[in-house]
Each structure stands twice: as C-alpha cells, then as structure tokens.
Image (cartoon, rainbow, N blue to C red; front, side, top):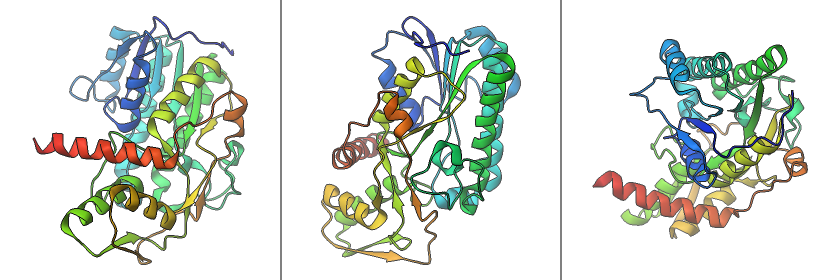
Length: 318
C-alpha cells in the first residue's frame, strides 16, 4: 500500500479550499513544484454538493488532492455555529474523499485539526491520544466532523488500498487569515485588536480569557511546506502532527503581538470569556523523524502576518 516517494512533478494537483489561509499557502508552495494546479471556487463547485463534486472529479481527474477546505473559526464561532460546523465539515470530507476514490486519485491528504484530541489528554499531544477522552465542548461539533474525515481516510485506505493520509496541524496563522472581530482565531483577532487600538490611541486592550492557556502557533507557509514534504515522503495509516513542538501562554503571546504591531498601551484579560483547552501542544517527534522541522520563528511569523494584514486591509478598502 505504501507508495513513497510520491512524485508530484507533472501531476494534476487539486487544492480543495484554495482561497482559505491554508489552501492559499499550499498554492504558493506548489508554485515551485512544476505541477498542473487545479482550483475550484464555490461558484464552480460547491464541495457540499455531492453530485457537483462527483462531476467535477470525473471531468478533471486530479492525481493528487490536498483536502484543506473546511468551515473554520475561533472559540466563539465554533460554539455559536455548531450545526454549520458539523454539517459543512462532515459533508465536505465525505464528498471529496469518496470522489477521489471513485475517480482514481493517486494520493490524498486530509488536513485535520488539533482540536480532535481530548480536552485533558496528556501533553504534548501524541497522535495515538485521539478518542481516548472527552473533547473540548466549545468545538466538539467541528472536532467530530474532523475525526469522521480521519476515519474515512483510514477506511478507504484499508478497504480499497487507497494512498490517502491524515495530517494534524496545530494553530495556524499568516497571510489570508480571517480577521472577523468575533469569529476569528486568536492570532488574527489580536493582530486586528492591537492595530486598531494603536490607531485610535486606546490605552487598554482586553484579551479574552485569563491569559493562562498555553498554545502552539505555526506559520502557515511552514505548514504548507510540511504538507508537501509529507505528500512526497509519507504513506501510512497513522496520522502525523504538524507543529513547532513549542508553546507559549496567551498572555505572553499577546505581548509579542503588541510589540510587533507597535502598541504600547496596557493589556488586560477578561476571565468571563472562555479559555478553551488549558494547554494544546503537539508531539511532533513523528514529523521530525520524517525529516521536517518548522523554520519560521514566532517573532518573524507575526511580523510577516502583520504585514499581510496591512496589505489585505488596504486591498479590502480599495
């Protein structure tokens, strides 16, 4: 079943979710791989529409698929839009994985999320801790949809011999992030909040939660590079964590973002807002053994992300 190394060069490669933060990073990275890049916006094919997905796969016949399409968001979005998060993510995974199988896709990579791990699993999170305990309640619908996608990949691999693999990214940030004031992830939310506070001269910025949870952050272009590396060099049942192997408290992280943005006011915390999981650090030893490590430091990554935010904000205003 294992067919490594897998040659990407000259292949028809479909990036599902190419407009998202991860998908656009994959498109950037694949630009150096000499592939025929296949992309489809929602107007061309809605990945929630089984017939449309099946027809698109039948006509385009992608040889490699990166399944990066998903409905994503921060704690508030996950907890508020619970039905959308489970429905959209379940149906996208179901449609794309099955269409890849029926249309002879040579290799597929499913991108999960570190929220699939139990809320109180031992740290750092090992790949084999999935399904060993209760999930974090605020993002349980999203996590269950992602676990179902992982199990689909495993099932199609075992029953049909498909070269389908699973990867689990940690918290990502960078160009193309969602800066919605309520529904964004913590990195984008803080970049926007500190930037707006700097412009308006606000003396105090309130960060949601206690500031004590520890989180790991990976620059999205590093994530894309890891995905290409694994697509070429990995083929097995076990999922692979993708992260830096280092974490930081939200309070410390907020100070890094404030310094990068140039905000010099006070930072306080709102404990009435949810903290989420106390700690979320991935064990990346399996990834390291496969020959890949993150290259972008947190400070450099935040600087690049802030530059992208300024550029994207300017484009949106024009």
